[in-house]
Length: 312
Image 1 (spheres, one colour):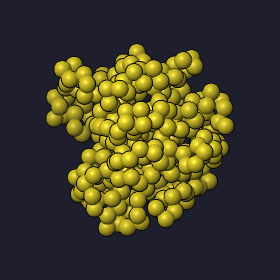
Image 2 (cartoon, helix red, strand yellow):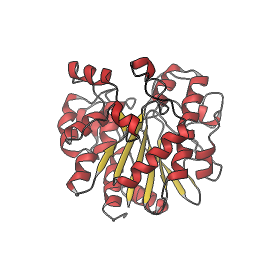
Image 3 (tube, one colour):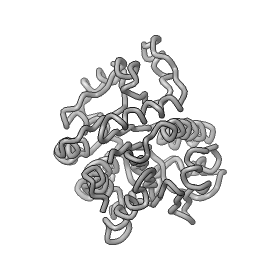
Image 4 (cartoon, helix red, strand yellow):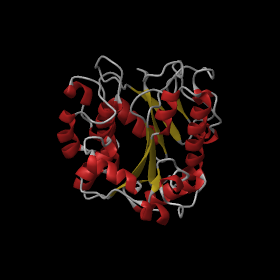
């Protein structure tokens, strides 16, 4: 079994209120089709369809305060309770005490240790490489994990060859970054490219952060556009994905965009959505991994079991 993971920054499960929750204001045909027309809300936190199962995950992990990206992503991608270890929810970048954890226990390294092939699908412009070269502490948990595992971060050549995906999905920002030769693509094409990558590698991760940015903006139009672009990419994934051998998994690090009445993150649960063969068994394994409710801490161990052929 292969796993294609979409990490969508700042998406929680919120109220079923289109006035504050763009999940219920946006047109999301792909997501709705996966879940038989129903999206999760605080009143109905789980949802399922013929090919998909969604359950809620605790993003607070028993630590007071508002969940943050640095600790949330570290927990999501290592299986370690990062805010408990650091003593605080911390972000947007990983707390200094968490870097050794990311170095040794990140999901890329653990996939490699099983003689499997991971791929971090995000492609970066030269400006990004210059920035982290000058400010090495200001790098996200995903990029840091890839580098700590000896993986190469993708660049414009990878983007143009189809081996990498732009963080904005469509490549439209690259012209302004000094790459007029990069063609803008439709979100569906980005999804098809991710599906093709999922057929080549055992574990593929793509990170989309526009949702978190839109949540902080509190602008309904921006939030709807970010979600609809993601959903259009999801349509392309569903079109190209071999669901008999690849499990699609979508999750987040903390709530934000689901409640535009506040500029801060939220304490809401985040979704864990499985699509493809064995989706219900995978969701059940995630639920059974916790004595109470599953949290971000339980994701990596379950995904590694799936990749190793042990969904329980």
